[in-house]
Structure formats: structure tokens, C-alpha cells
Image (cartoon, rainbow, N blue to C red; front, side, top):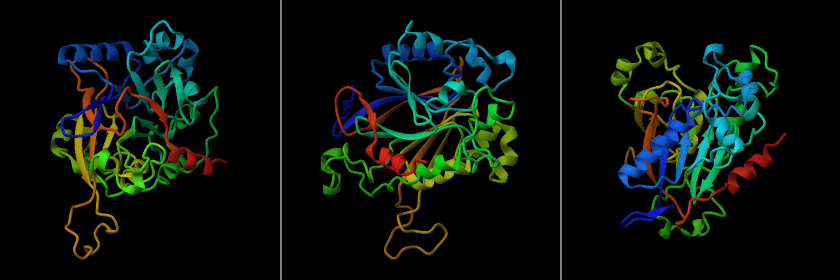
Length: 341
């Protein structure tokens, strides 16, 4: 249930998880422990890919990983109804997924009761908190190709099916850029009289991806990252680490928070966007103080294993108090309709 922060508007308690790898039981047990020991109630869980929504043994053939790592884990219990997710769960796709299952839901949908897949790219609404997602990982050779993959997959399409496409990025970038308004919901300007009906210009509060946006390492503690992941040094140096598609979405939507996974490490960064109308590296706009644009808090998390930093609890402002209710985002649906083949 959305709460009210003292002196502020309503908020949601959001749990964010890195790579799940089918460990739903472990994840939900961890959340239950946190709720019990900290006296909180989590409104929603956001997972940043490698969810592995494997329904039965036949889905293992669509999982891109060495055969020795192919196992059902616990999702099938939630798909069959044996168990039910105790908290609303939203996730994006990664590069180790039941691709035949997720390909049935390109625009997102329910994969099990209380578990929602965000599709290849989408934006949804949770009590007025806009949550966006961009699935898969970047591959330059396939980025501008269409979606031609279909099961049974070949050795090539088993991997290309989860690559991000230019259409995914284009659709996200059709959203109206966030306005400068950052006040509490009860003081919304006239243009935001009904923010739930017309979310245009309201910033995306939380954005999920599996891949990191290109260049994100430059906004955090690189030396600390390299102490844990030395093999990333060359990619960081030549700015090839991550997804250029993600970087485009980041600079366009400027979400308040961006959560990712993929590299199996915890890494935080703060991206300060240039003020509206200011060209990066160009002359300063007269009368504008440098650095007064929006900022995005980036956080990547590890995979769901003991003694790993795979979970973070975040309080996020929303518009409507009360039980957390997931709904479609009107602006996203309009863009999706206008870009349909």
C-alpha cells in the first residue's frame, strides 16, 4: 500500500533486484525477511532481467546458456498456480530467458498471477509512478534489423531474439521529455491537472534495463568497479561498455532512477543532464546556472545469490495513495499505436 512520507506526497516502497536466474523462491523469502525484520511492506518488486520464466522442460530449449546450466528453478510453481507471487513483480528481459515464452508477449503481459513482463520496451503506471523498461542487450549487427526470429531457434536466432532493436528505442524516445516541474503532486501545475489520465511530460520515475547504458561508468566510481571487474577496463577506456540504445533513452527520457544488472556487480552512478535547450559542450545559455538540469540515479545490482548485493529497497514518490494498482500508460499506448506496422 502506498504510504505518505512526512511533509511530502504519497510514496511507494519499491524493491529492486538484479539478475534473478529463476530464483523466485529465494527472492520472495528474502523480501519476507526484510519486511519482517524492518517492519516495512514492499509495494512492488522490479527485476532487471534474466528472469527465466520457464514454464516446463520444453522451454529450456529456448534458454541461451550452456546445457549444464539449464534448469527450471522455481518459476513453474508460480505459473502452475502452486504458488502465488506475494508482491506485484515487474521485469524486463535479459540475455538468459525463456525466449519462446517472452516472444509471445512483445508488448508485455502477465506471465503468472501477480508477475508482469514489460515486453521488449514499454512504460506502465503504478499509482502515478511511471515505470519504463528496455529489454535485452545491445548488438550492433542486429540493432537495425527487424524481428524475424521464431521457435524452434537456430544457434544464431537463439541469441538474436533477445537483442535490442532500433524500433524499441525509437518508441521510447517518442515520449514527451520531462518538464521542469519537480514539486509535490498536490501542487501540480495546470498542465498536470489530471496526471493519471494524461502523463505527458511527467518524468519516468523508474526505468529498468538489463544492459547498462553506454558511458554510465564515467558517472560513478570507476576505480572501485575495476577492482571487482578488471576485465571491463578496455571497454570503459574506449567507451564501448554497455548499450548505445540505452544511452539514447537515458538522455532523452532522463528518468529519476535507472536500474540495471547483467554484469553481476553493484554499481551506483549519478548522471547530471544538461538543462533544457543546452547543447552539451556548447555555449552556456545566458542567465542559466550550469548544472541545473535533471539528474538520474543509476544503480546496477548483482545476481540473486547468498552474500551478493542483489537487492535494494527504494522509496519513490507517486501520485495516488492507496493499494498499488498497475495500469497502462496512456502516452505509451498512443505512441505504440502510432508506430504499429
